[in-house]
Structures are given as structure tokens and as C-alpha cells.
Length: 201
Image (cartoon, rainbow, N blue to C red):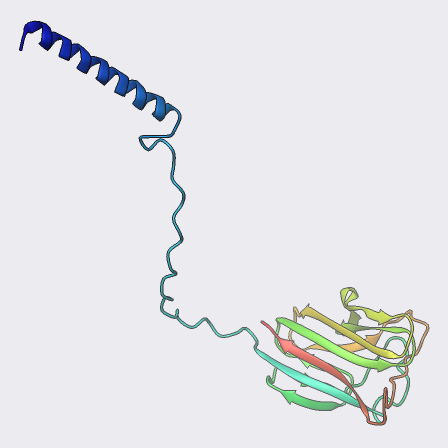
């Protein structure tokens, strides 16, 4: 091969390399070649197997509870005047000796702590009821209704700060209406009123 021929071939190879480089650079810049453009995400894999069951949690905090009730007619035959307590003279289940009866309408919370109080009473007049501790009404516990013949229902949490706190459900003083605890409300069967006390802590 002549010197001239070899030089010509080298020149052609150089032009080819330069052209190829420009080609690659152009397509890379336009994100059409050499991996510059991200591909589509693949499909999610299958969920793994469930792990082992963890240890059992601590026991609940409920320390005890008691249910006291009345049945009308028979119980609460007299109207409940303002500053007077509703009677719950019958004992339902009791899970804790810290909650005991002091009388037909009063109940002793022996231990200092937190108690959830729930009560429901059918009354014939518009009126109010509230939780009293040691004879003092707790203002945040007052519930009532304006019209109609239906139950007054209340639920709250109270905190006692001394032992043997006496609890009752009272028609607040200052109200003008004595409350009739409705007998046979809604039918022919005796109707109940309930006071449920749960010791939380």
C-alpha cells in the first residue's frame, strides 16, 4: 500500500470517528440515547409474610365498677325537688368494694382516684340533673332537656381528692321545677333508672 493510500484511509477513519462522536453527543443531549432518560418504574413486588405476633399488652386500667338502679312505679314515687337527689335504691352487679351504698340516693367512693359516672333517668318535665360530690354539684356535669317526656342522660369523669367521698345525682338548687320520675315510660312495663360508677384509676 502506498504512503498516499495509507494517509487517505487514516483521514477517512478520523472523519468517521468524529461523525460518530457528534452523533452520539447529539442523541445523548436530546435524551434519546446512551441511558440519559430514566426508564419507567417497574411493578411493585409481592407483600412479604406477616411477622410474628407481638407480646400481649398490659391489662386494662378498669379497677372496678357498680350498677345501682330504680324501678318505676314503686321507687322515686315522690317528686325530686331542687337540691334533692334521685334515688337508686336497688343494687346491680358490683365488681369493687371501693364503691358502696351509703343510702337510697348516696354512694361512697372509698378510694381517692378517677371515676366514670353514667346515669339515665326518665322524667316528665323539662329539667336538669348533675353529679354532686360531698353535696357539692360539679358544674361541668350538669345535663338537661328543655321539652318533651324522655330521659335525662349524663356521663362524665370525676376525680376524688379525699377518701370516702359521697356521690349523688341531684336536681340542682336554683331550678324552679320538681322532677317527676316517669312511671311506665313508653309502655306497660316498669321502667328503670340507672347509676353506673366505674373506677378508672
